[in-house]
Amino acid sequence: MAKVTILGSSNAIPDAQHENTHLAIRGHKSTILVDCAGNPIVRLKQAGVDLNHLTDLILTHFHPDHVSGVPLLLMGMWLLGRKHSLNIYGLPYTLDRIEATMDLYEWKRWPNFFPVAFHRLSEREKTPVLETEEFRLISSPVRHLIPTIGLRVEFSGSNKVLAYSCDTEPCPAVIELAAGADVLINEATGASPGHSSPAQAAEIARQAEVSRLYLIHYPTGGVDPIPLVEEARRAFAGQVGLAEDFMVLEF
Image (cartoon, rainbow, N blue to C red; front, side):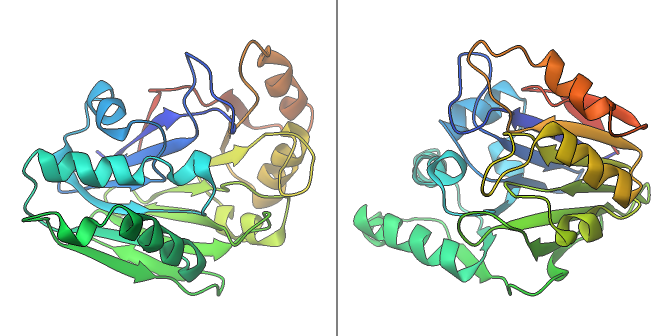
């Protein structure tokens, strides 16, 4: 059975209980990390994710709360003796900047560094990202402040579907990615340029006819999250919940 672990659920300003939003898609043969925030070595260990099982990293966009942990992840795995390759996926805008960041650390001079393969994705809707025996992932550009992708994950073993909006205003691409999904994880920062409110997330869930909606990337730091869920429930008749750090969804 595949699992999705929420590694962080906060918007750009985390607190002691909520790390910046990122998650892990875990199967029997591989683990896919979606975004990389904070100190990933510590976070993945806390979540029980084996670093040696990590095969792929998908970066949705180049904002610090989504990619700041990449240098620490790469350096940490190198120092721990990783030998096998890591695949990193993202839009050209994102990966160009990640490579430039790593070049500032002169990572190509780190001795015996493990192979890293960069896979630049098209900005077309429903672009194939990767496919294994366990997962099929596709991406579409969503509507944020910089080039950003949302994701659809199809689980081969169960025929279940997960959609993840990433940071975005409401847009048709998210509805398409989430169409008929069992679970939609949608951001709920609040209605503002590049972001969505809980009510807007619920409307996306309603139009996409998903079964369950989880709100993520919401304000933390002492903000009561219960009204966020109540707001979404007024606009969506299906199940609504709050994504919490270390929560596990099974598919």
